[in-house]
Image 1: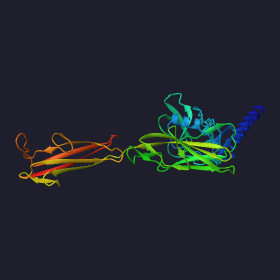
Image 2: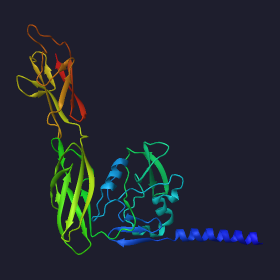
Image 3: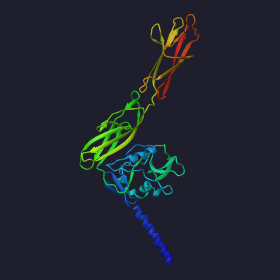
Image 4: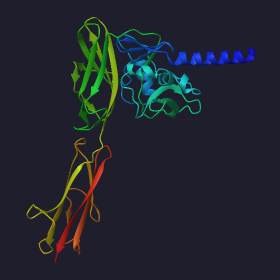
Length: 346
């Protein structure tokens, strides 16, 4: 009987511990900070402060984060053997009733990086899926969301800043060698003060001041940092990155030109066809000088003269047609080819 009572007491204690753990609450400290007293860590209330990035970029982003003068942020940790013990897993399984305190949790898409490398493969790191509460290891070069967490109980932030990129992080080249990109800061002041200044740094260089800027960014990837300062002396920064890419092929126009009339032609009588000139003109938004190569039996370039019925030392083409194939390629490797047929009548 005594043994039976002891077993019942053990079971009761286990159930009590479980009920206590699942009833733990997240605490809204205000100013964008949510405290988890179970793990003694503080989450940013905004779960989407940046766009997806690689694991190395995500760790660097968290480490450089400065929220109202509070530094020392990091990515959440993963316990490989127990998803419920991982910091994001704890949120999902034990704090689910308070998740409404957190905004912009991404339940679909690339999910969230943790700071924990996979012990099975150092090229992988663990991520957590809020869609189904599963943690998996994935290659570090893939892009995922990043969510910052801080050890201890952090008080409210008097100033919060985020960056909006018109058109998103991937920008198509819209001018020679780059694109103008519109960047806007969104600043929240929580202590009654006023905004003093917003400064911008792109690729480590000063890029101007103001709520919005529209810098010209060359092809490639660029790091962007915006820092807001309030009249009460507090500051906060946000960072992101933009990739300017060129995926659009050049335009090309191909014609046969009758040298006697100077007009484009699609057919010509062999008795009147003394000289025929090829015309190939290419243009590209991003590349001012796209390469052009035409073939019509032999390699030819813009302005080549084809002797349809020539004089001495020329070749007479005894054919009913000439096919010109032209290819244009820009500096990014985008290419397109077109064909033009000239009919020879007899």
